[in-house]
Length: 355
Image (tube, rainbow, N blue to C red; front, top):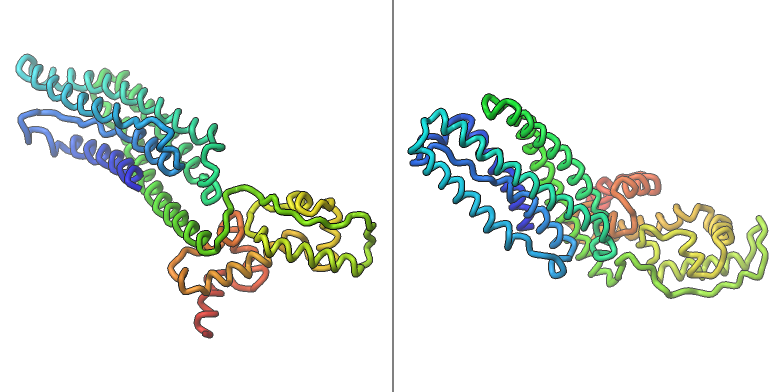
């Protein structure tokens, strides 16, 4: 959470500084006529630090801030030294031009460094999923992938602004940064909302899972039941099918297999040593429903218990749905409405009002 807040702060300070400089709120207020702290230099390092901590990879990853912070401070000292040195040797007009040229080289350096860290962060996220299976059992990380895509657009706008600045010989270029400033402002609001929401859901899911005394870190249990597959099944319901269905049902409930979002007939086949087609026939004939609807009914019953439990009164509907075995909020709402006639929120309110 700390590094996510620092990332948002770095982008915010950069935008506020640009607005203040454009409106001449900082010039001539200090001994220095100009000062542009390169806050943008810190954004991607903070993203990297947030990522490795969120994915529980911090102990295995390089603490990049050990290098970035000293370089950041060196950039500020160099910029101040530059202005002090040239302020006594050139006119104000020439100083402004020289200063913009200097900060442009500094900005290019920041852009290259930032892009490198951004690319490496994405490499960690995309190529090293085997290193963080635990977090993947709580969060599919789609929101982080979306942030990377949105940030790519921001980099394109930044590069275009720099190209225009250089092509205009460092004068009259300020308009080229307007799209970037607007875009990054919207982006930090989105990131703040998504980050707070996802971290809350993550904590809630961990608490729910801990209270249910289950371990669903993405691995399917090796526990199996052995059901005879010698008997050939017809379209007619048989007592044998009922017996096997009861064994299957007891196994799924006892092992809480329905809480696994990706549990399929193929997984059940491995657990029971019956073919997927045979299992499908048994469930359809006895339960009178598809395997998906059969599992979803169990998931909905679990969700009902959690929705009415006072220990989770302030928990999000999303957390409860995901920990009940659904793979997304929308799937949970659709299935719950289909089976109960209510949305989860409506069911909770109606049930609590009755009680």
